[in-house]
Amino acid sequence: MPPTLHLLRHAQGYHSTSPEGHSLHDPHLTPHGFSQCASRRDAFPNHNSVELLLASPLRRALQTCQSTFSPAIETRKLKIIALPYAEEASADPCDTGSEIEVLQGEFGHGVDFDHVKHGWTRHEGDFEISPPALAARARKLRAWIRARDEREIVLVSHGFFNHYITGDVNEKGEQTTGWWREAEWRSFEFAEGDDEGEAGLRETEGSKKRREEEEKAEGGSVEEKERAREKSGNREKEDGKQIPGDSTRYEIPLYHTPTVQGQRTHATLCVSTCSSRLWVT
Image (cartoon, rainbow, N blue to C red; front, side, top):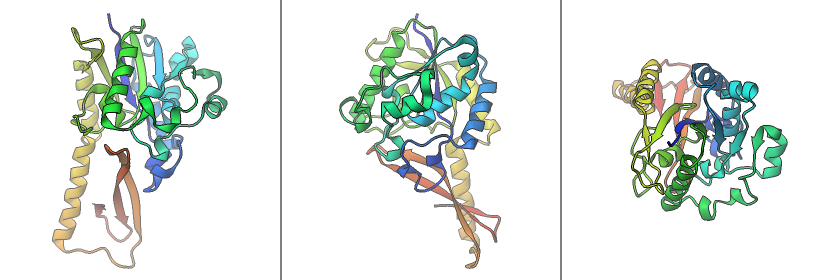
């Protein structure tokens, strides 16, 4: 019987805290990111039944896996397996990994780097960022996981590549479902009767219900909150109320997202000290 897969997006990294964050090489988690991991750790009920921990070798994914699943690591001595096939779908510095020796020095013996080979950071061959190559990488990753003997598996990957893992992209590499929130967790079963080479996934009903409840508690999905901010900004313009010229303007990045060409874009939440209104650029 194929395993159940618990798929997560990593928590907040430093690349998500400034408009230039995409230029940071392989960033770590922020303090807020570690706080997100703690919340997810407390909410995850299956620490005693998870048999295998997998993560992208990018720092923020490894740190998310270490922090979120520390109960399984500390009490049952599970070791994280770093899988380059789970890296993000972009060639920006923030989505480009570090060399094996650097990662081994930082993460020690708690992570198995046997699958990480020299040159994995070059985005060539299996790691090209074209839609066909990304789809093929996701298929290989799913097939590898499906063939494992463990019955309950965790994988920490990335916001955009998770869409490839779950098959929620079209032939152009455009995602067909909403964005994953930071440290979001969804559970999947492998589709019965599916071609083993495809190894398709189907989200469990319990996961769908949990996700809906979490989105409601957090004020909606990423897209819903973004539309609300844009609507607020449009009302500001319609009211004819301009931000005073001597006010202080703060720019807070909402998120960075890889495009199908492997380059990142970002939206910015702007806040003025002279106004309670917010707007998006």
